[in-house]
Length: 303
Image (cartoon, rainbow, N blue to C red; front, side, top):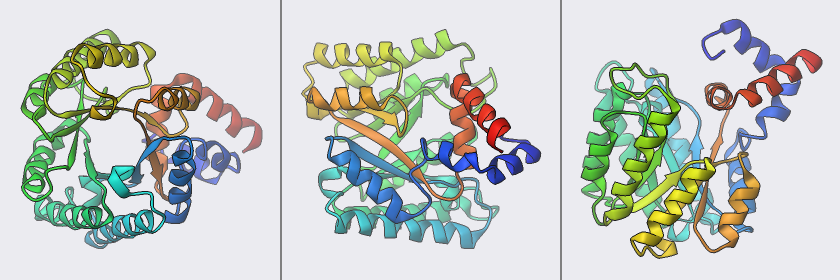
């Protein structure tokens, strides 16, 4: 679906699309995204906001994405949502220049640095999203560069990659923030585990490393079993509730999100927003077949 121009056109034009998309995407504007973060804050949930867009090959677009993040951070500060990292931002480096044909890494680093400066002024943090495996080394190099001036910059590691357990060991140091997720990109067997069972086992191995380390683990999973294991590992290592957090996507298991927050644990919601929501939505469809059928039935009956 993500590669089909025909389906993409049908989805973008169908009247039902907006109502379905709003379940997973917090609108298209900065104001809409900030409003969702504010609403979540009333239920003691934290936020990480992602301005959607990736694989940018136009310098002007990359510059505009940087500027949008700066504007977003300023808006979060004005609404008193950013202090102490209550609402932070997540940034895909390919959206701010990494994929540009010339000097992509350098441009992405400069843009990410500007976003980090805005985050520091707002009193919050930045997490670098991880994309497909071909960008992993580049993203981790940018992370190392940024952490020289902004040691709180967070990283994302994907449990389905064979290399991730070793990356967890490298990053499980004091002050290091690491979001561990399963991974949402189609990767070859040469670099990634293919079965759900193997990915889950890798996730637990990585989680053990992070919980035993001195860093700040961010447990990004909707899997009840993995959430339970994370809690047990935190207890085993004597972790206080403010020394790690759970993370879930906007629109997925909201009742469980509230339950975790209500019991006193830190629960952060990943909030995507922006006009380029199609690729994000297709990844959510791929992760949950029931979502795909629901969406397609809507297109068939109301499109």
